[in-house]
Image (cartoon, rainbow, N blue to C red; front, side, top):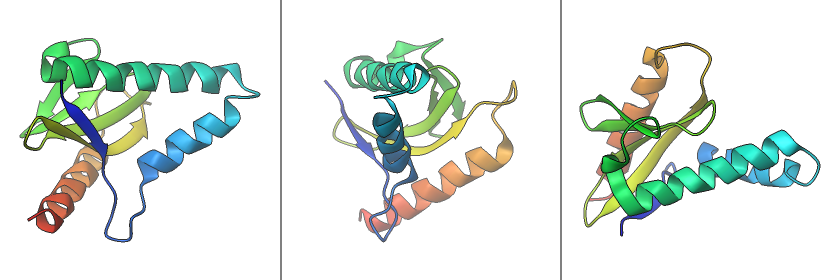
Length: 119
């Protein structure tokens, strides 16, 4: 089984963790938030069990080392790091057919930062 960790910047902040916490807070009163949150946890679990072998529609290769986890309209970029560990790098909400270049570049910057601080 794989391990999944969520990227945090040098200050310990994580937009991904903040987004999930926000959904969790709204889940008490919003069915949409409840469904999104449940799907996100299910897809994280798929990643833990199958890794990149989960395949479409849940997981898709993007470029270089970056993959995309695809619960509902949420998109999470992730990468295999080491010792059976995946790092969730960035999150955005899908609005177009193709992953926006700026979102991919942000995931790459987060990956670079993560690798530099993980030496």
